Length: 293
Length: 133
Image (cartoon, rainbow over all chains, first blue to last red; front, top):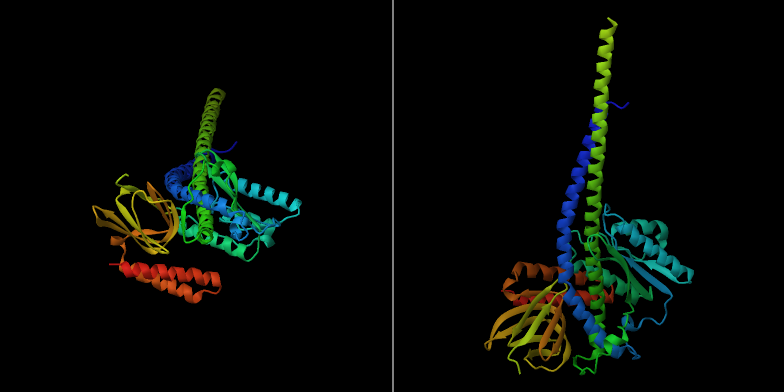
C-alpha cells in the first residue's frame, strides 16, 4: 500500500499544476478579449479593400494586360500553401488540426500531379512540416503576434509571397488558418489569395453602377492595390488565427483545471481511506494485544 | 445637397475616423483633391502627405498619411491608408530615426523590388519629417 506521504506529495503536485493551468486560462481569457477586439477593429479596412478590389477586378479580369496577381500565371502546376499556426503549444488541437489539413491538401495536390511548396507562419506548424516536407519549404515566419498582431508584422509575409510569385516560384497560393468562431470553436479555413478569386457573379451584378473616375488609370491602381490586398488578407488571417489560439488555449486550460480538480478529489479520497485503514489497523493491533494479555 | 460628407479614415488596424465634414483635402498622386459633398464617384491613389479636414471654412485638423487609396462617392469619402498620424503627434526624433532607418534599408537593398520599397519608405519618412513640428 502506498504510504500516506506519497499521497500527500501527489496531491500537492497536482494542486500546483492546477494553479498554473488556471493562471494560464486567465491570461488566455484576457488576451482573447484583446485579440478579438483587434480582429473586429481590422474588419472595416479589409472589407472596404475587398469591395474596391472586386469592383476594379471585375472590369480588368478579362483584359489581356491584367496584372498577374489577378489573372494568375495561366497554370496551376505549383501550389504554395501558407499554414498559419501558433508559436506555442498547450492550446488543444489548434495547431495539429492546421497541420493535418495542410498535409491532407498537400497529399491531394501531389496525387493530382501538382508540385507543393510551403511557407509556414508560426513555429509549431513549421516544426512539423519541416520534418515531412523539409525540402519544399520556401520560407518561414515565426514570432509574429507576440504582443498582438500588428499590420507591420503581416506585411513582410505578403511581401515574401509577392516576391516568390514574381520569381515564378508558384502559380496558386492558399492560406490555411483557423477562423475564429467562438472561444470553443475554431474552423480550419482554406483561402486562395493568389490569383485573386473573383467575386461571385451575384455580388458584382448588383444593378448598374455608375463608372467611377480613376485617378490614375485603373491598371495602375489595381497594380498597387493587389499587393496591399494580399497583405490585408494575410493580416486578417493572422488576426483570426491569433484569436483562435487564445480561445483554444482558454478552453484547453479550463478543462485541464477541471481535470486537476477531479484528480485532487480522487486522491484526497484515497488519502483519507488509507489514513482510516491505518488507524483501524493500529486499533486492531492494540485491542488484540490487550486481549492476549 | 447635404452640407456635409462622411469622411472615413481607415487603417488596417482600425477605423480611425468616421465623421461628417464640410470638406476634406486629400493628397492624390495626381494632385491634391478637395472633396466636397456630392463629389462624383472616384477611385484614386493617395501619395504620402497630409489630409486636411475643413470645418466652417477653416482647416480644423491635419493628419499625416503614408499613402494609400481613396474611394469617393457623393455622400462618403473613404481613405484607406497603412499609417495615419495626427500632425500634432509626430515626435521629431522618431521621424528622424525613421528616415535614417529607411535610408539604411535603401543602401542595403539588393533587388529592384527591395530598392523600390526602400525608396518608398525614404519618401514617406522625408514627407513625415518635413511636417514634424
